[in-house]
Amino acid sequence: MAMAPYTGAGRRSRRAPMAEINVTPMVDVMLVLLIIFMVTAPLLVAGVKIDLPDSKAAALDQDRKPVQISLDKDGAVFVDDRKLAAGALAAKLDQIAAASGEPGGPRIYLRADRGLDYGRVMAVMGEIDHAGLRKVALVSVAGQAPR
Image (cartoon, rainbow, N blue to C red; front, side, top):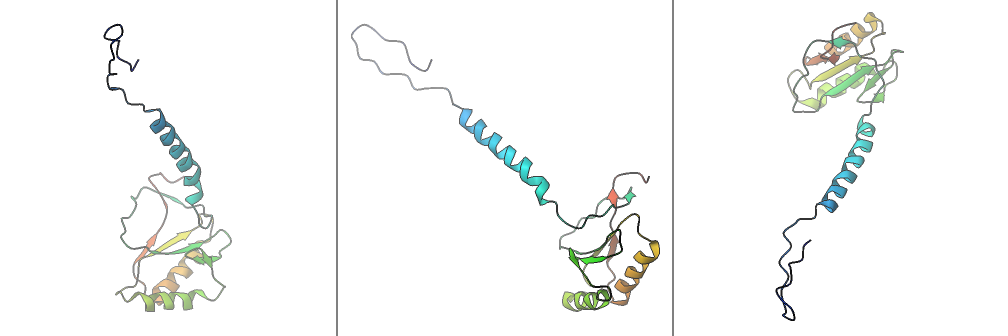
């Protein structure tokens, strides 16, 4: 109990200060925050659905946000999650190269579906090279052995 014993009959006594900290409200708040983060974390993952190939290479450290070019299983091209028309990739890459102001352009992450034709991926890489963009990284699932 938090109350001190009485000092005698009929005397007025002071209660001793409570020496226990009630942590129940803090635990309640932490559990609510945990549930909120567990529910919202899966919703933060967004983008184009692509089945990436596996790789033993480690992930790249990057300070600036790279331009992501994605090819889905049907061969459609996406630049930063925006679908491009069939012949619009070259113009978009020229625009990216002109806007960057860096030698070699910004970093480009090329993501292609595992089941996509290799020739289609190489055609996109040729367009990237033709636009003068030289900092290209191929994205795969890191840390897993190939199937």
